[in-house]
Image (tube, rainbow, N blue to C red):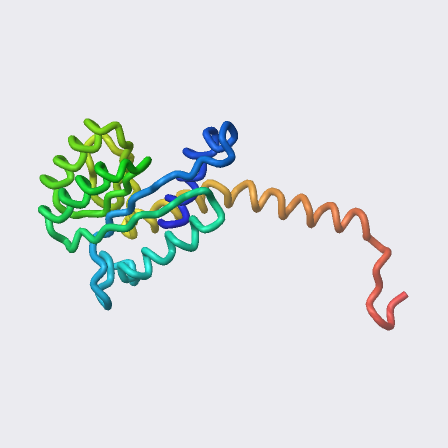
Length: 176
């Protein structure tokens, strides 16, 4: 998930970095919770681990990260968005479960002209990036089924090529 968001951030920021090599982007990440030991929605990762992965992913890019802890609280999520607006961030990444708070956050950030990315829970008007383990199995199955026939055809063609190329030229020990 973090790698995907980092790739999207880099793609979003890349055209502008060509114009101004000195430009640094300020990206705010409002995490669902920073409470130690609490894993985020079955991912197996804690909030501090997700925050650290953002730090690692951004370290080679002209990105300054600002972190907020939503603490699973709607009022806190709205207050964090207001703080990011006051700080004039370039992009806001919202990870919060509350739909009513997410709607308010979307309105405030849109009014401020700050684009939003939503993680796991929709924010109106924002691209949504989810960790959907239930959909992962069927998606992998369909991708595997899509490529199994061409893969088997390539394997058979390779075996025929090897047979025709080396027919009668390779002998086991004691043959010949």
